[in-house]
Amino acid sequence: MVTAYPANYPTAAPLRTADRTMAKAKILVVEDDRSLADVLEYNLRQDGYETYVAYDGQDGLNQSKLRSPDLVVLDLMLPIIDGLEICRRIRADPVTKKQLVLMLTAKGEETDQVAGFSVGVDDYVAKPFSVRVLLERIKALLRRVTSPTQPGDILVSQGVLVDRERHRVTANEEVLDLTPSEFGLLEALIRQPGRVFSRSELIDAALGGDSLVLERTIDVHVRALRKKLGDHADLVETVRGVGYRFRDPAGVR
Image 1 (cartoon, rainbow, N blue to C red):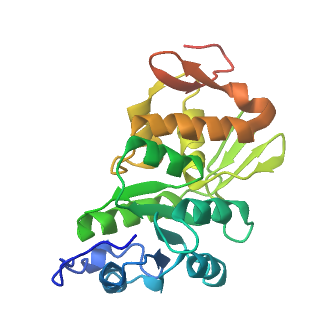
Image 2 (image 1 turned 180 degrees about the vertical axis):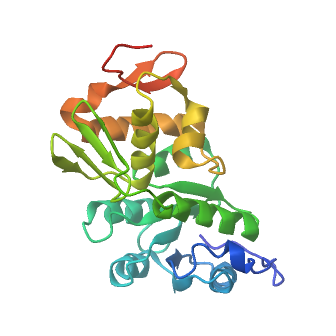
C-alpha cells in the first residue's frame, strides 16, 4: 500500500559502535512505497546491516529465497502477493522458514495483528512510526535468536528438549519446526515448570519487553505451539483468568 511521506521523512542517527551488535545481519525490506523503502534501506545500511529491497510481493518472495535474509521487514498491502501470504509461504518453505518477519503496515487494528501472528509474524509495527524505534525493534528481534548461550544450555522436561545453543526443540527425539516466537515462548515456560505466567509476563520473557504485541497474540502463539507439540500439547496448561504454565512433573506448586 503506497503511503505519502514527506521528502524530509526523518532518518535516524547512526548507532554507536558499541551498539552494532547485529552488524552484518542480512535484512530484506519488502515495501512498495519507494520513498519509505529508500529511507529504511539507508538507515539499515548506516547501522551496518546488509540490506536488500523488493517493491512487490513476488520479488520479495523470490529474494527471501535468493538472499537468505536473517530478517524480513514486510509490508502488509503489496502488489501481486500481500504480506500475509508472503509470510505464510516463508514459513511453509524449508529454505526460508527460520527467517524472522517484522510486519510493517498502515493498519493497526487488533484483528490485523492476530491475523499476522497466526501465520508466523514475529513482530508488528504500524505506520506512521519512528525510524529509530523500528531499528530498535529489529535489533531486539535479532537479539532473540543471536544472544550468546552457554554450551550445553539444554532444558529437558517430560520428553521435551530445548537446546538454546542450537536453537532446536525435540519431543521424543523428533525435531519440531518452531518459529522464533514459539521457541521463545516454550523456553520461558519450560525453564520454570509449574509457574503461572500472565500474558504480559510471557510477552516480556519470550518476546522481549520492547515487543509491542497485544496480549491476545500470546494465545495465538500458544495454539500454534500446542499444535506442533502434538502428543505433548497438554504440557502447556491454561490457567483460566491468569495465563499459562508448563506442567510441573512434581505437581503444580
